[in-house]
Image (cartoon, rainbow over all chains, first blue to last red):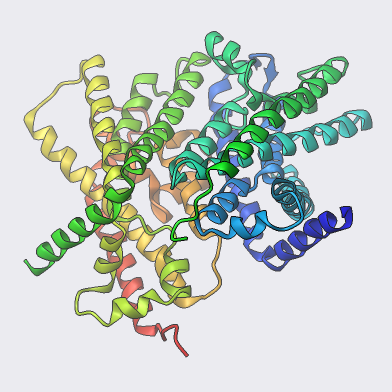
Length: 264
Length: 263
């Protein structure tokens, strides 16, 4: 049975490979975004050496690695699920002998593997050539960061799956998906590290899963968070992964009860 | 006149199809506004850590953002053709459009009209008015006229660029990532362009003139800066006409080359 799930990863990876040309422009887009924020932060720092615990050099690295991490963990599982619910093909999937949600996660993995190898890695190399990014030299940091990156992917995909499942309850969740994307980008710390948020917002963020997607891993990677605290970050990510399983399971259970296929 | 009545028919059509999903309409308005609020939050966060951005104060940057929201809302209402290539070229709907007497671009745009986006314009105008009062800027009635002119120019710049972008689908059938590319670049016209290096500034001013949809026209109403962008402000309508002219020409030429989707 497990081999069937692995096939889903493989097939999605090959499918993405067929469309790889589309992702070359993605690298350019991310490089442009990183460039824009690089100049913006340069202007914000001005004469100041460090803000919110980040030196300007760390900030540059933070921007680069955060955007490139997004290049890896980003996927459209929410849209895929919503479309399958809307066009009714989810009904066919439900009678097949596998777990629909697990299959979706596997397809996400396939896309993630593709994005890691053909988007994040080359993108990071290009960005390092253009901007003064200082990568950590300690191999331990790299290993821990890779583990964190994997958990970022899991948590982000869980949020996507949850958003997608809402299509069971509202006929068209386009707006919700857009809201989710905007919120995840801001609250996960891609655009601004959470350390820069005003106090009240920072304390709200500590109780939400978003910071575990980008801000915490990138802070470890840039060296703002010392290596000694990395274990705590990993623990928090794992905790969020476990906590998020519950709402997904509940939503899924409720959704299957109220499935009606439009036009069917 | 014929186009005006056609326009009215399209609007009625929109109302009929969209009122089936009434909740969606409001969710879309809400998600648009949320998107803008997030951008404003970003500006507020930035200014908690620095008193000025390239010589611009917080109120000025927010003012620029408010200005930018007005043309963007209008543009997003009438140019919601993000999936043009997918829907019209790949699925062949362009053939249906071309069999009708009205101009093809007009039809494509009005089939996809998206009124909820207009809300952003009103919010932007509100933000602008608020900053205007806060900064004690002098107000003359003629300013409203100039504002209308600048907004129109900015809308035309957007319209021209996105018409040209959509027209690329006529020339190449591979869906390219160029639309998201633009979508990302356009955000940089909202910040003071003098924080970027010379190359980016040049691109944003003259090649992909997104500086003309935000910071340049808005600077007309603000105090003069060292680099005095406001000298360029009144060029906005001119740029708009030029860019839209190029976009439209590119579109018309593309339609001529278009071979149809059928076998």
